[in-house]
Length: 251
Length: 234
Image 1: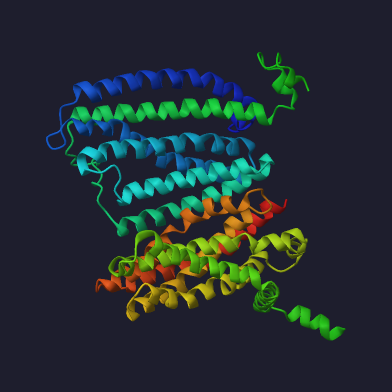
Image 2 (image 1 turned 45 degrees about the vertical axis):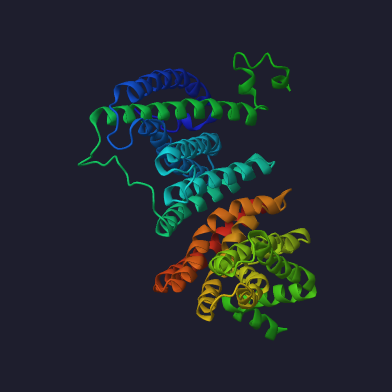
C-alpha cells in the first residue's frame, strides 16, 4: 500500500487532523500536570541541602528544556518553509514562537523565585540565566519581525531567515556566555550516575511530558487559527461547519 | 568601444568589490553629517556614563571597556538603517540585484564601506575616550585591537538585520531588537580581552575568538544578507 506522506502537508487536510489531535493533547496535559505537580509537591522527599525550595525545579527545568527545544523545532520548521516553500511549515513556525517565548519567560521567572532563597538575590548574571534571557530576546525578535511585515509570505521568509541565523548563533552565544561567567549548578539529570532521588526524577519526567502535551495542544490550536486567517478567501474554508455562519467567510 | 567591452569582461570580483566600496564612500562623503551624527552619538553615550554613575576614577577605569563597547554597539545600530535604505528608495538596489555579478560580493562591498564610515572612526576615537576614563595604555591597545576585530562583525551581522527590515515601518527599533542579541558574543570577547589584560591574564584566547567570529561572519553573512535582500525585494 502506498502511503501518501505529504497528505498532511497541506493546510486543508492538516486543519482537520489538528482539530482531532487537540483534545487528546489537552486532556493528557491536564492529567499529567495534576499528577506531576502532586508527586512533585507532596510525594517527593525534601532535599537535603535546599529544603523545600528545590520543588520549583518541577516547573523550572521542564520549561527551560522546552524553551530551548522549541526554538530548534521552530527554526527547523522555518527552514523547511523557506527551502521547500511549504505554507504549513511556516505557519507552524509562527505558531510555535509565542509558546516558546512563554516557556522561556516562565523559566526565567521560576529561576528568579528559586534564586532569592538560594543565592539571596532575584537575579544573578550567571551564564545560564543570561543565555535564557537572550533566548527570550531571540523569540521576541522573531515575533516582532513577523508582526511588522504585512505580506504574510514575506513575513514567513524573513522570519525564517532570522530563526536560522539565530539557531546558528545560539551555541556561540551559549558558550561565550558560559566562559564569561558560571554560577548556575551543572545539569542534575544525567544519563548515568545521577544523584537524584527516583521519585524526584519521575515527577520531573511527568512534568516534562505535561509541558510537551501542553505545547502540542496550544501550538496546534494556534496553527488552526493561522490557517483560518490565511486561507479565509478560499472555498474550502466556507465548507467547514461552524465557519460558514460567519459573514466574513462568505466574501 | 571594443576596449570598453574587454574591460567589462576582465572586471573581476575584486574590481567589483573596490567599485562598490568607492561608490559608497563617495556617497558617504557627500552626506558627511550622517557620519558625524553617529560619531557624536558614540561620544555622547560614553560621556553620559560618568554623569550617571559618579566621577570615582576607580570605578570608571573598571567600567571603561564595557562602556566603550556598548556605545560602539549602539552607534553601529544607529547607522545600519542607512545601509540599504537609500539604494532601496531610489531603485539602485533593484538594479544591483539584476546585475550579472554576484549579489553577495556587492553586499560585502557595502558592508566594508559601512565599516569604514561608521566603524573605523569609532575605533580611532576610542583611545581619546579611553583616556577620559583613565585607562592604562596597555588596556587601550587591547581595546583598539578588539574593536578593530569586532566592529566589522557588527557591520556584517547588522547588515542581515538591515536587509530583513528593509522598507518596514519602525525599522530602526526593530533592527536593534533583531541584531543586538546576535552581537552579544562580540561584546563579551571584546570587553573580556580588556578585562583580562587588566587582571594580568593572557588575552590571546579572546582575540583569537574574535578573529574566528570575524572569519565566520566574513564567509556567511554576505550570502545570508543577499538572501535576505531577495526576500525583502520580492
